[in-house]
Image (cartoon, rainbow, N blue to C red; front, top):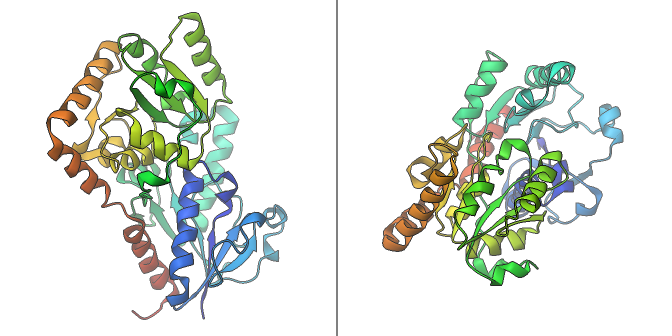
Length: 354
């Protein structure tokens, strides 16, 4: 049988967005690998060996393979599920699918670092036999900065739909004080969270919970402003567990996402599946992914942000049909649909009969 390796090494960061994508890939193959006409091999951190059943084959994502990739056994097809993995096939005969989530580092880096990243990414594109992007925006962005004759297929991210019962309440005392708004993402400049500081001064009836890594200078700047300006209704929690995210999605009044750079914007669809209003910027992929189911910000003036949040919450309360429509829209992004598109490409590249 043909052998496919799916690089799930990002499982080492299980609570980040890409880590959750990798986990859902693994759970899909745990359920379906036994019925496929090719062998499924998963590249995973050591602690996940055996975690996804007996129908898949496991390979440990040891750092030595980044130095000596020829130590890998031979595979017919290799799927890199994101563009930043340092693992790669060493044999030219191994066909490779490269999934591109974004090229944000082109915008974030400067000078020599940007040039090195561009060279690194160019090599990734040249090596791949098939390119996939997670949105039309990402496809356009790649073609703008890295023109290629290779076709780029758009396959939207799959979304995990967790039942409310799987959520666990985080240990955040203010959750019981009053209604709250929620947002999530690494606390970095591209997430644009600072625009919420002045907006929340105009919304004392709500708390704002922001979850995500706080190990950045940008996060420290936000903390300092919160302290200096005595903003008493914004709370940075740091990283949270998936079950805690589910609880916050299910119990927030609205989800606020002022991000400037998104390849897809996974939280927008995730929270929509819980029937919650989403207030988002219209930058990069967010207009495409949110479609007409999101309340988009026209600017980042605090008065406009506060007005749009109140409008979204009020609209949901007055129009239950809107809740149902948005839940149904979110359910179109299932992992079954997502993986069916990839399985089709796997079979095409392996030249398996349908």
